[in-house]
Image 1 (tube, helix red, strand yellow):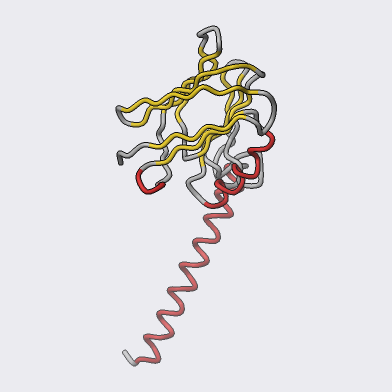
Image 2 (cartoon, helix red, strand yellow):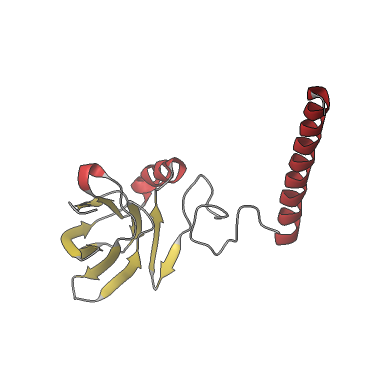
Length: 164
């Protein structure tokens, strides 16, 4: 084969591959009815909130969202902090962002308001005004902080672990 023939063959293969990829994406969008995943997943892809904010979850009367692994999610969660009564941040050694932190929020009467796992370094929680204790467990280390929820953007707590 000459280099001219090889070049034409390579170009034809590339065009065929790109066409197949485009067709399969179009088919997947048409077949699934949803672009970027399902609306029931907890990732930012396919969420109904827009702007990169992860899916909002509900547990009883408490709404929450967590994430921030990617830049879009991080920026969206930081931007939304002002609208949520409680904002939590989880970091490890050298300020590494953590995910997989188990969070429990207990009200002033000892009742559990929330028990959930954070999908990233940020968690936003909608709670009624009051005094709460936030327990955050990463690997085998649990930390706790008292917070007073007074309104949107007021209560913030940061948890830091020196383990990886």
